Length: 115
Image 1 (cartoon, helix red, strand yellow):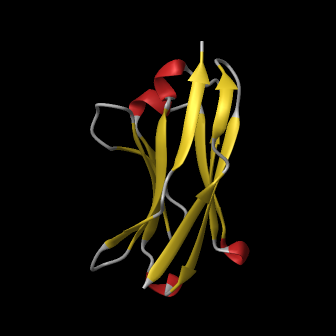
Image 2 (cartoon, one colour; image 1 turned 180 degrees about the vertical axis):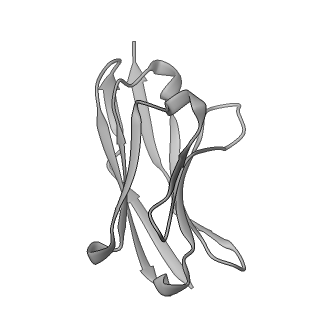
Image 3 (cartoon, one colour; image 1 turned 90 degrees about the vertical axis):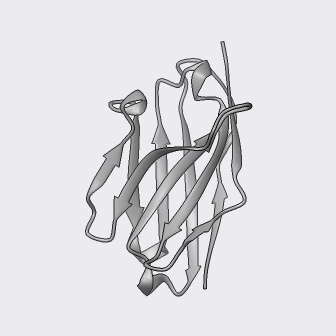
């Protein structure tokens, strides 16, 4: 069992920045990768960024150059630094822990970017 808890969402103007945090607990030694997903109203949930246990990262094209995923192993925490935010980044952002047998989701945190 793994638990993940997100924090750091909020309201920001276009061009601004936010940093999301995701704290993992439980059987963290089994985690292969951590990921950030987002779901906008009326749209499917999409993968935003991932980071593996070895530190390799991957991003969806729409956030490349603006978002950075990172991890602090000592704190069992993954971050998503979001810069140059756009109104189309507005969504509920979810953190997920990827284990061999399943994915564990957090409760989500709202990010709203005003124009």
